Image (cartoon, rainbow, N blue to C red):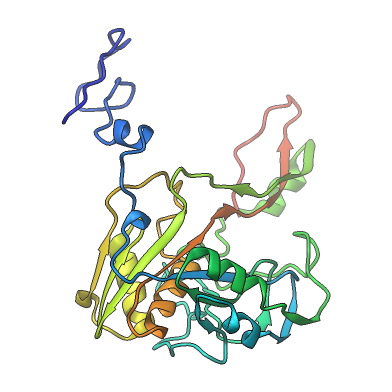
Amino acid sequence: MTVELSLTRDPAHIRHGSNIGQPMTRTDGVLKVTGKARYAADNHPPGMVYAVIATSCIARGRVTALCVDAAKRHPGVIDVMTPAHKPELAEDPDAKGNPFAFRMELLQSDEVRYANQAIAVVIAETLEAATEGAALLSPRYQVEIARVGLDAGEAYAPPVVGIGNPAEVRHGDIDAGMAAAVRLTDATYETPAQYHNAMEPHAIVAVWDGDRLFIDTPSQGMGFAQMRVAGLFGIPPANIHINSPFLGGGFGSKGLISGPQVLGIMAAKLVAARSSSCCAGARCMARSAIVRRPASASGSAPTMPVR
């Protein structure tokens, strides 16, 4: 059934060939706001099991011990994936093989690089059993001093930034422009971390059939996800089928497949091709910008080179 939303007034202006500024009816809007949209994680194939990620409670250090036996003894728990017990990957998840490949934490070592990092995955017959099993791991740590704050470490220029852009771009002589200014504004602006609160959380349902992989997961870039997963698991991209029937908000956080989703695929592979589901969130990191703005005697800002 198609639901049409009546428009209460004519648009203030008409732009031929453009949807900007026009009142539109979203074809999937009614399904989403009425709860009828079936998102990727709503697909529950027969025999599906659940994967819950255990995360670190320290910001930096190493995991020295996990009570894996206690978690495995919990009713309903099938297996526990750890750095010592996991499927092997075909490529290093830290490697940047292409501009859109970003580092993933996929249980490759016992090192902890940030708070709430994945340190194990508990697989169980129910979501409750997996959650309770993760709580029984009781990790112990060798704690190191955390690097907190954007100014806590020594500044450096990375080889590339973003999706492969150069770390520094120069136009003109910045030092000369600063020296010639009558007034100079020198200020630091900081923004807090921002969290994406989409109506559809990050989740995945993964099913292995030999070397073929079937994934239900929200994605804003299924081609990128297909290539990344193919490289990590050493299978042809054509062997990976990704289903993303709806996108319940992404804000760019679903543009590339993330570590928790890949952990779900690994968990499904570990338990003999039975599918697993796991959830993850996304956020924008805190930022700091130092602004230096020169001005002429009249108070206007001259055209300045950018670095």
